[in-house]
Length: 250
Image (tube, rainbow, N blue to C red):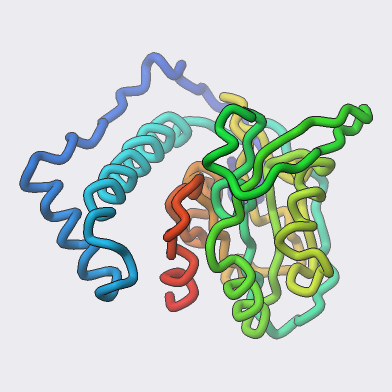
C-alpha cells in the first residue's frame, strides 16, 4: 500500500513463485537447547519437566507455520478494507491492548468426538438460527490476566470470527463486560490478495499506532503493523499453559 494506505497498482507474484525458506527441524542438540530454554523460562515447579520436550516441539511447529505464512503474505497487498473507525475512548490516557480471541484466549471446536479434551460443552446459535453444539476450552489465567491488564490498559477484543460466534465466546470470558471496552469482529478486518484476514490498526483513526498493542497467535494478522504486534503461542488443550502469566509480566 502507499503511505496514505490507499491501494496502488501492484504486480503480485503467484504463491507458487514465492520461495519459502523453512527453518531446519531442530537437531537433537537444538531440541536440547529448546528444553533448556523452557527450564530457564519457567520457574521450578511451574511446569513439570516431562512437559518440556512436548512444549519445545509445539513451539517449533508454531515457528514453522507462522514463518511459512509470513513468507507468503509478505508479497501480498490489501484489497478490501472496512470504513475507518473512531473508537470512543473509555480511558483516553491509556494504551489500547488489543487481544485476539481464538487460540489466544480460548479454543473452540465442533468435533464432538474430542469431548474428553475440553472442559465445556456449549451451543452456538448462528445468524440463520441454526443451533450448533461445540466444545470450549478457556486458556488458563484468562480471568486474572484480563482483570490485571484492565487496570493498566484499555482492553479491546479484535477477532476475525463472525459476530454471532465471538459474542457467545465473550460471555464466557467477560460475562459482565467488566474488561473489554470495545469488541470488533470479522467485518473490521482487512482482506489480502490471497484471501487472508489481517488486522490493520490504521482503521482506528483516532488512536496513534504507538498507543496500540496487538496480541495474536497468528503472526500474519499483525502483518500491516508488525511493530505493534506481540505473538503468543497457540492454545488448545494444555491445562498447565502459562503463556498469559508470562505475557502479563512482559
